[in-house]
Image (tube, rainbow, N blue to C red; front, side, top):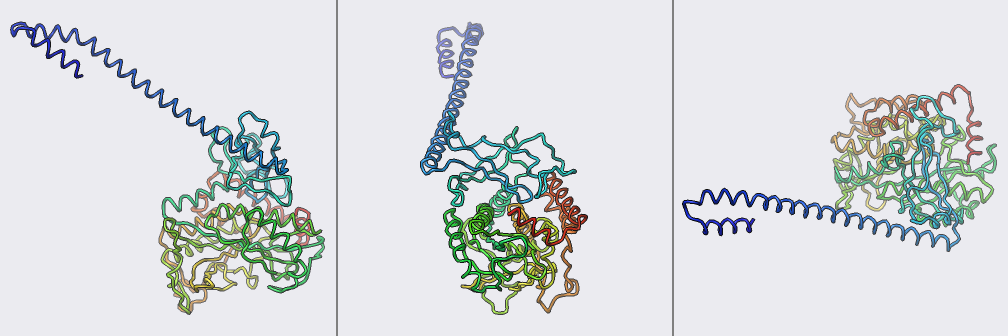
Length: 525
């Protein structure tokens, strides 16, 4: 532009005033081609810049792929050196079946561009269209045998397996084979989204702990490893070798254990996983702890049963979930008012803590379709069964379905326990439902109803509603819960409801007894 102005100026000085207009016209005619050339030159420079940017981006992508390949090669060579031959890609279907495939470490190292992604796939129907006990497609799920889902490994979940020393393991999410997007049937990525949304949209983080209860049996005919009662030393003494081995193997997998004790039933033990501010990692630990418990039990000629009810005269096996919330920016807990009032009550919970509990209560009937989803699950529920029988909450009452608990050191009412959870559920889906329901209460700023132990209940809340009496009622409640249906997506909810209902109907129509269920669980373990 400066050049053009200069030319115009110079030309104007060299012509007379009488000829200025004619000369300007001639100049414009002469400059137009020059202006066109300058514009073309600018466009050429722009295209070159865009090409250079694209090439730079491609080079950066190539460097990243090369770096990832180098990391993968280093990991695989370390495994090879330590004698590990197989890498297991671990996933969990909607009905808590582990679905995994293996890639030999040598095969991965032979590939020209070493990458742990895009290695394995599993038929989509396996994650939502098959019951937990057989690979038979269930009608009405909306799924068929045509599509497959690829397994995207999560390197942060990598573990060596002490009970299978020639194998290592990595947890995976499920991707659509064509689009590369997360599959709506992937419960692990669903839980990740719940956690991320709470942090990004509401500045809330979740802390979660889980209690794993199971029975040790030597045969399917009620031959338990021992006969004991709650918190007795008999099981600890007689099963010490098993417990030490189990503890060491869990520790080798970075699964932190807070407490171990005997439970109320024969041969029954409880392993408490340490509270974690990473719910997805905690869910991974639950899955891997169950695998490890079963494997170590077999080493001692025993079977570990997580079946919710194994004897109608004994306490069942639960998988109680403890939850609290914290400020995701500061990391400070926000469940309670930091009060240690001896009387206890809703006033000791923060406004968000109280709303979180109320959110759980409002969605509890539907949640039961996710957390205790089998016919056997409901054999464990009822008055006197340590699970609760009403939709309500109480402070430190182990007969309440939702129990607000205090910290032993500070006496603050700082977390809530939901007892209506067992090991027949998919832990990722159950946690997604529980945490999302509590968060829904916080977002809506719900007011917590009076405690079941509160004598000052008003007339409208003096008679708490009863819990669903069986799995079919729980599934109906789930289907009518708009929040939970939206959380699951149409694809997941259609498949889940179809399979769970079909399983329940088959159980009712076959007339299977509790002993039949025990034998089936024993052989599957």
